[in-house]
Image (tube, rainbow, N blue to C red; front, side, top):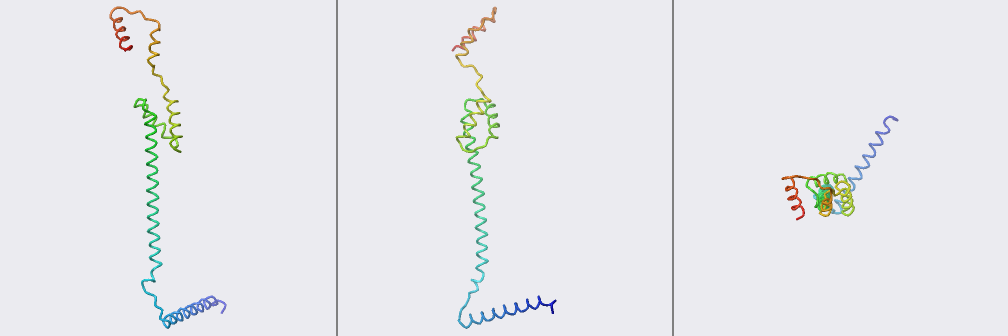
Length: 160
């Protein structure tokens, strides 16, 4: 009897539940309450709708993230292009490579960081026109014949 105690309890519970369901059915029948068959599957339909909406939300979120990344890329490219207007193409490519590792917090800070990179790696070493004129005061190398005429012609074109 002790061994079958659990089985007996489960059997009694099942009988009580079945009896309750049958009496409830009889009550509905006597009271002329009808449950349409299409309303029975509402839970399944709502679950399907929830799954569809979750899928749409996930797709929209992913699309939004992709668009934000793309916008950041365009902003980075624009800032680098603006900062590198006066650089040679090789220097522009090098600046782009250096700026790839820079974090993009917002446009202003990124522009400042790119400007710092440009200043530190591409300091102007080209001589300005004034520096070239100052170099004319440098010691004159003596030249003879055709070399002298070449040097004069170069100086004339440099001064123009």
